[in-house]
Amino acid sequence: MKPYTFKSELTFTDILAHGIIWILLTLVTFGLAIFVFPYYLQRFIISRTAVYDEAGRRCGRLVCAMDFPMILGSVLIWTVISIITFGIGYYLFLYRMQCLCMNHTRIVDLAQPIPRLP
Image (cartoon, rainbow, N blue to C red; front, side, top):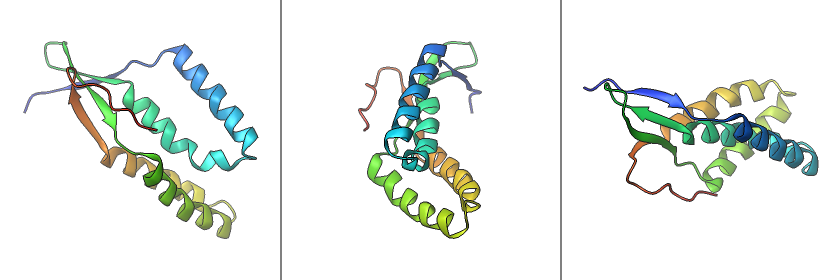
C-alpha cells in the first residue's frame, strides 16, 4: 500500500467567511443552526484537504458525501437527546457526527469534478 499524506488547504479567508456565515445563521435561527454546524464544519475541512503521494505530488482530494437529508435525520434525533439530557447529550453527538462524516468521506482523483452538494 502506498503511503499517502493529507494536507489541509484552508485559507484564513475561507475560515473567516465560513465563520461569519455560521454566526449569522445561528442568530437568524435562534441557535438551531448550532446542531447542523458540526457536520458542515467537518465537511468544510474535509473537502479542502488534498492527498499527496510518497513523492510529494498532489494526487487527489477528500470529499465528504453527506447531504442535508442525511444530516437532518441525525440532527433531529440528537437534538431531542440533547434537550432531554439538558445539553449533555450534545457532547456525545459531536463524537457520532465525526464518525458519520468520516464514514462518508472518500478519496477522489484530481481529474474528477467536485460534486455539488447542498
